[in-house]
Image (tube, rainbow, N blue to C red; front, side, top):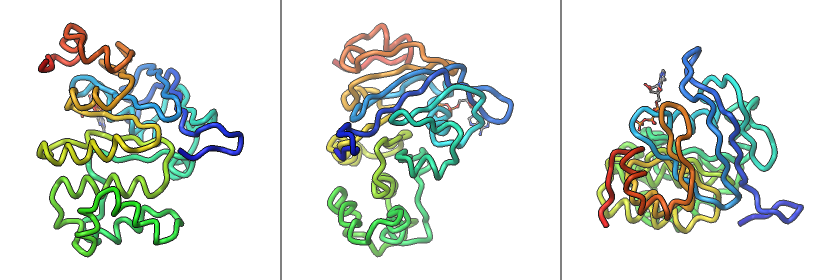
Length: 241
Ligand SMILES: Nc1ncnc2c1ncn2[C@@H]1O[C@H](COP(=O)(O)OP(=O)(O)OP(=O)(O)O)[C@@H](O)[C@H]1O
């Protein structure tokens, strides 16, 4: 992991009493959580509880009504989305943020943010499939390849915190394995929203459950995996033993 001049690893995220929504409609009603540099947080909850809104608020795509978002002690709340990206937030939205009319390589170039073109090799090393398909159009890729492209493009910007919104949605189990293996090798802070609870809890070290725009539980992911009452209460699921 890169270190700052003071020798501390970057990527410490602190969200304090965040209140946000769409226009005047409040969805997040005072959310607080923190992730240390290099930590992995799973953000879970039933449909419509505000998980996507939380990530969208972190990157400045909603209306913030109050509260703070600090990255390595720097308040991001008043910044534009592009300034937050420059500060270190990388975002992979649920919609897979790729340009379908551009080739794989052209898509990746848009993620370079001023870095030299040779940095594209990082993406092809992480996902060799993208290297094989570098001249194919983004719209011609399978769902899994599009997701790899979306993740790789976000990583090329060298974020210190990666925000992932349901990266496994609609993907075959073998592609989910490939993606999770790549994500598990990353050396950065990650906030993961995911419906595949077992995979999310295996990946994460901490978990936060949301319900109706509030944090209703926060704790170690390993403990949550075996707490059937907790999972049933907040998600309505029971994991296979
Ligand atoms: N653009 C929008 N304008 C107004 N309301 C919205 C908008 N996007 C989401 N909402 C509302 O905000 C609430 C939270 O939605 P959000 O997408 O954050 O939930 P979620 O936990 O990510 O759900 P899911 O698991 O279904 O993706 C829902 O009631 C939703 O209808």
